[in-house]
Amino acid sequence: MATTGGNLLQRTRCYYFYDTATPCNKRDPGTACSAINGFNRIHAILGASEDCIATHPSDMCVALAALEATVRVTGKNGDRAIPFAEFQPPAGDTPQTDTNLQADEIITAVDLPAKGFCR
Image (cartoon, rainbow, N blue to C red):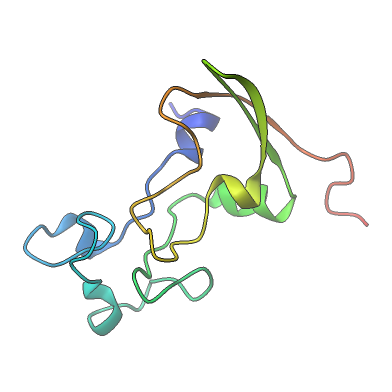
C-alpha cells in the first residue's frame, strides 16, 4: 500500500546511487556523478545538471507537476503551501536535496487546481 505523501517523498535515484563502489553526488555530495559518463540510457533529459542526472521514480509526481499542484505541509512553524514545481527542486548543484520539506514538517494535503487539463 502506498500513500500520496510517500509517493512524493521517494528519492530521485539511479543504478549508481545504489552502487556504493561508485561515486554519486546524491549519496555523497562532491564525489561526482558516475551516470554522466557511464551507462545512462534511462537517466534525466529534463531537470538534469552537471552534478546529477538521476530521474524521479514517481509517475504521480510528473502528473502533479503538469497540473501545477500545491503541496500543503504543517510543522512547528505552522502551515504552508508549496507549489509543486518548488516542492521537488531540480538537482542543480545540490542533488542530495530531494524536497523543500523542512525536517519537522509533514505533508497534510495535495491540492489540484480546478482547471485540470482543459484550458
